[in-house]
Image 1 (cartoon, rainbow, N blue to C red):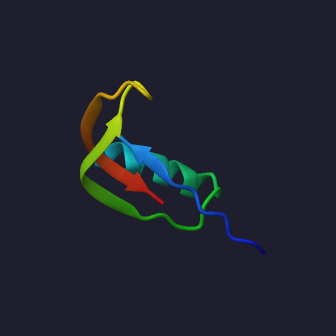
Image 2: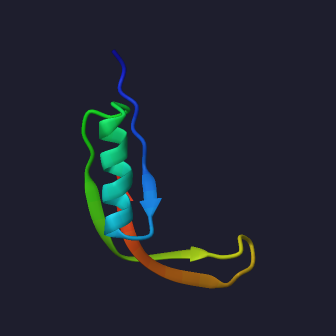
Image 3: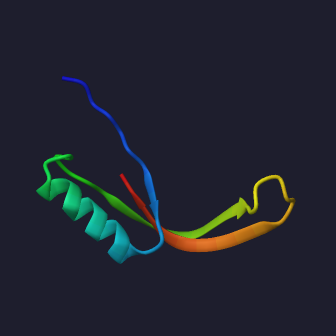
Length: 60
């Protein structure tokens, strides 16, 4: 058996719970963890030189 890690950036904690729960119900995952993000910064649009900030959750 091999292990596959999937990382999903979610817009909210509720979205992460919904996706994680759906994966469990469909038996696509045996478990999931959610980490609340206080801040994420990224370039948007890519290569624009402008940065955006967001909050959300990381689903593993």
